[in-house]
Image (tube, rainbow, N blue to C red; front, side):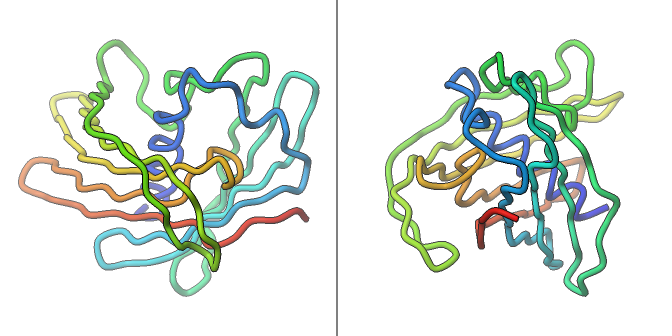
Amino acid sequence: MKFSLAAALVLCASTAIVAGEPNRFKKVKVGDWVEYKSMLVDDSGKIKITVADKGDNEVTLRTVATDKDGKAKPAKVRKIDLTKSLDLADTDILPKGPNTVKIENGRSGAATLQSGGKSYKCTWKEFKVTNKRKNRESVSDVKIWISEDAPFYGLVRMESVAKLDDFTVKASVELIGFGSK
């Protein structure tokens, strides 16, 4: 479950920052992939997102999360409409219904990061995500770094601190590689 949450954080955070911008997935090809190192609480693993199929109007992504021992979780499949800009509301990992997720923008700036053996000029952004589900509310403080030179969503790094009831959960995701087939 931990790595499903980490994969969800990657998609949520990266989709949030690029919402409303031109759809970056128009230029991907079948077999293109990106891989992230993930850390959730005191556990680590990897998340690999691969372009499984691409048509004129839609891209299908396959996301596989593996734990520190290399054991893979069941793959998640997501379809992205290429005729629209990326939109957080279309993210299938978030709960559906009115007023379930609220995103508040915070500070932003620029930085250069080293990740996966490469240097990236990034735009960073902080925001707060409030998620109301049933009778519970979680609040996450998120900081993400996006680069035009990074594939797919452009995500280079993400750090999050989520609070739910009396629990605080720290998570991070960092780009470690990308390629094609």
